Length: 269
Image 1 (cartoon, rainbow, N blue to C red):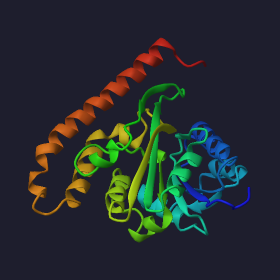
Image 2 (cartoon, rainbow, N blue to C red):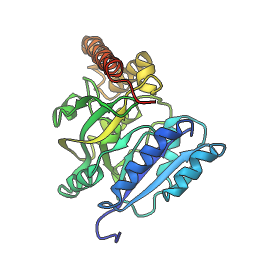
Image 3 (cartoon, rainbow, N blue to C red):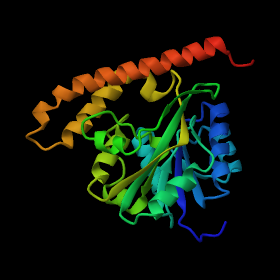
Image 4 (cartoon, helix red, strand yellow):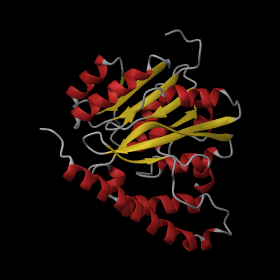
């Protein structure tokens, strides 16, 4: 494709241990190339030879994982930037939906003050069946400082210059690095949203945020607290506790739905 429209840097960190899912993820990225000029950067350990060979077959730029956590891996991917204007992230078991990156890019292009564009997200099980869809639209931006983070990372696109202005992602964080970045980016411009699902998040026990809900909640609460005015921080437990309860209940409901779906329609061998 010609570079008549701004290009997107897509960062995909992987340990290379889920090749079947990774192949699906790479195919979903490849499908975006028909409408979006993108550079795919795959961050992986050098030992993950099969994953790296698979990524190379899709034209990916390969970057060695620094082995300092997910945030450091993403930041390494960011440093592969050349002239890309926008950044997007995808997990190695998640998917971009058809036309998803194009829609997010066009949202950012339509508003020069916008620094983040985000859309809806389908939550899928290991077999790729939709369990639940998150599509809260503009409400997600309002909830960020005190409520749950309802902007799924694979459903967001960020203006690169704004992301560099906040220093990329905090490498001390394991779960809430995207929430921390979103809260910082509020000072740099507008958030624009669509309710249309643009990605699919794989909901299964091995997902970091699914398997360690307690750690994820604790880190998210600490991140939100540090972005509050000092005089408000002592009051944060007033909403942290009910938000934690509601988030845990929602996660349990999605898990229960996924299990019921798998029991009713087991995947083919």
